[in-house]
Length: 194
Image (cartoon, rainbow, N blue to C red; front, side):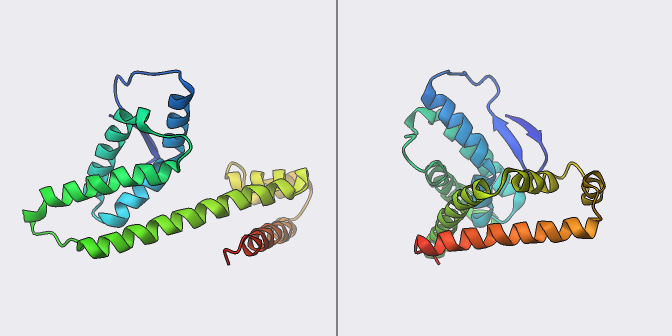
């Protein structure tokens, strides 16, 4: 396995992985790369020991790469991948049952899994609505938000470039954040999710 990037967002690709140029493979790769952090967070929810979680996440990643052809692009990728991760967590816990570790009962683990997947669904809806609300902003406002939150330039530097004081820019950002927040909440209410 190759590990690249920061410790928060590293990418796993099997060494010598055969690359396929089919649309299904391309969708799998794009969704796998985009969802790794969420799959890892799911594993950590069930295995709070970081070393155990990393071991199970790596095993899950290998299995996902081996089973990529079984992925149905019409399904929720994260749910599919977390189902595989869940099976790997259970296998890990069975294998290490005699190590004196405290583990969750099957009932508790099932409840944690359901809550985690429900949270995933709500976060996916919120991400979709956030994209929608950002699209509703004037182009200049959206570009300002993206620039300020990209982390490349400081607010002070951006304010100087715009000929504003930093506190004025902070106030503009606060109003824009509030407008996006309100837009997302209105959309959630309209969809019956609040």
